[in-house]
Image (tube, rainbow, N blue to C red; front, side, top):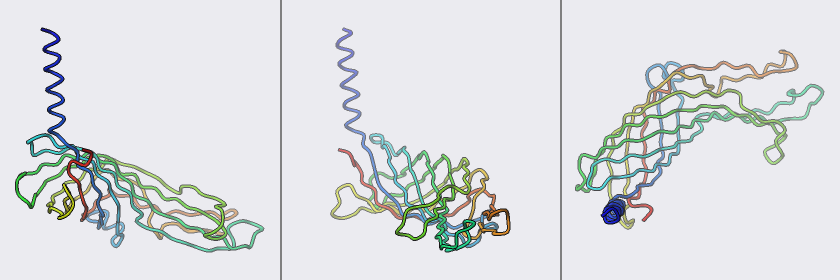
Length: 231
C-alpha cells in the first residue's frame, strides 16, 4: 500500500512539472528621476539592461521569478599631469557610476487566452549603487590604480504594468512593453560632476559631493521573453 502511494505521489509531481514552464528574457530599460530624486539629479538618465526568469503555474494567471539589472548612469574621463607628486606624465582617469539591482518578481496576467496579454507586476529587492575609477597612461596601457569611490545599497520595490505581443517566427516569443514606478530606501551616491581632484589638498586628493535620496524612477522598458524557454 505504501509503495502504491509513493508511486502515485511521484507520478503526480512529474505530471505537474510537465504542465508548468519557465519564461526567460531580457529588457532595455530607461529611467527618469521623480520626486526627491528629481530635486537631486533632475536631468540624470538611468539606462539599464536586465535579465528576467519567471516560473508560471499551470492554468494559473500567476508568474513568479527574479530580475537582475545593470547600468552605467554616468561616466567621466579626465587627463591630468599632476596626479602623482614628482611625475608630470599624463594619466587618464575614467570614473563610471554604476547601478545594479536584484528583485523578486510577482506577475499577474488577467487574461491567458488573448493575443495581446496585459500584466501587472510587483517587484521587491535591493538597489546597489557604486562608483569605480581606473587610472592609466592611456586606454591601451595597463591600469596603474583602480578602486571604488563610493558604494551604498538599500531596499527597493517596483510597481509595474505592461503588455505582451506575440513575435512571428519565434516559437513562444513575445515582445514586452512595460512601465514601472520605483521607490525604496535612501542611499548615498555620486553623479558625473560630484568628484573633483584637489591638488592643494595634501599631495592631491579626490573631493566628493555625494547625493542622498531614494532611487525614485519612472522607467519604461522594451524586451523579449520566451515562454517554455528550457524545454
